[in-house]
Length: 141
Image 1: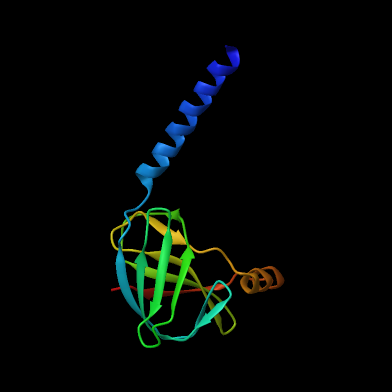
Image 2: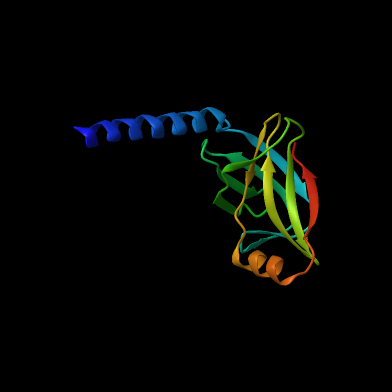
């Protein structure tokens, strides 16, 4: 009986935490476009500069990124994890020398940015350099 009570308490607590996380999650279906004037990495994949479409596929942060010229598409998990004031939609890149890595995607008027996980190349670069990577911003339309 005591174990059952604690099981119910644990389930209720977990449901409260999960429910509150879902309330903060941003809405799926957001779309934006951007012209990225330089080649960049999405995790360990090199993408050419050009026009890109960005779409949030669900509230968990699955993003579809598509190059408009080559039609190359990549789907990544980028959960909402960077919080701030609602503002301009933008892309945030970490830069190491002449290599840029997509770090965050912010859609219009949202309080949470989608943060991409670092790929192996960026992890190696960021740990081997004594300085922090340079940030580059590209506005979404």
